[in-house]
Length: 82
Image (tube, rainbow, N blue to C red; front, side, top):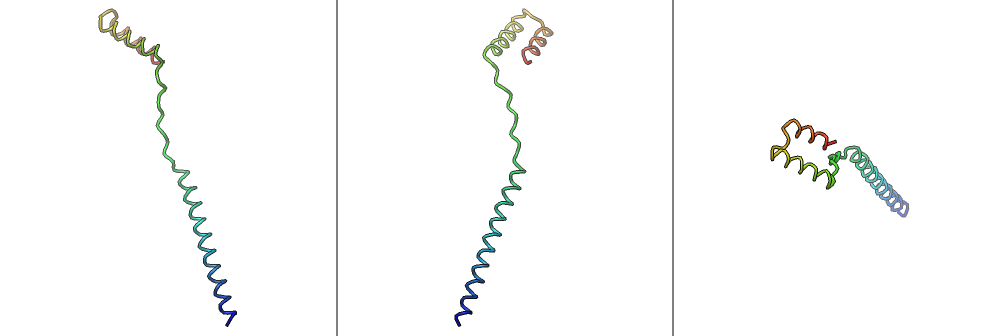
């Protein structure tokens, strides 16, 4: 009688151990697969300095007042973007 109960206890212990190992493998596999599929963050352009912003505003004002023509405005805009 005693050996049958002891055998059942060992079987239950091995089943629990097997389930724990299977769960651990599942967690590790999920994390590895999820790490490979992380979405790429969008590239954010660097913020303009105050001097560049001020120069662009001055360029716009000069164009609006008619001090420079469209070609000069566009060229200045391109140069300020660099």
